[in-house]
Length: 73
Image 1 (cartoon, rainbow, N blue to C red):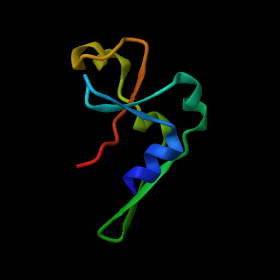
Image 2 (image 1 turned 180 degrees about the vertical axis):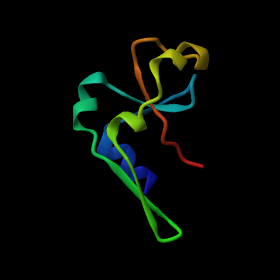
Image 3 (image 1 turned 45 degrees about the vertical axis):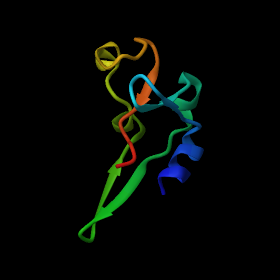
Image 4 (image 1 turned 135 degrees about the horizontal axis):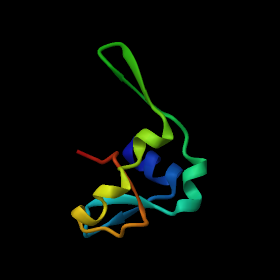
């Protein structure tokens, strides 16, 4: 599932932050992400999948890039 998410978002792994990064142009193409836990469906809208930009530099990333909060455990 993770690989499908990476492919669908057009994300690339950012070594310094260890997060997935997407180009700003891809943000408008993000779809809601649904998952099931204990028969309950949870949905993350596109904005919920993006880390707040205020954290970017604290994590070693670039201030104006988009990093996804979704990762592979």
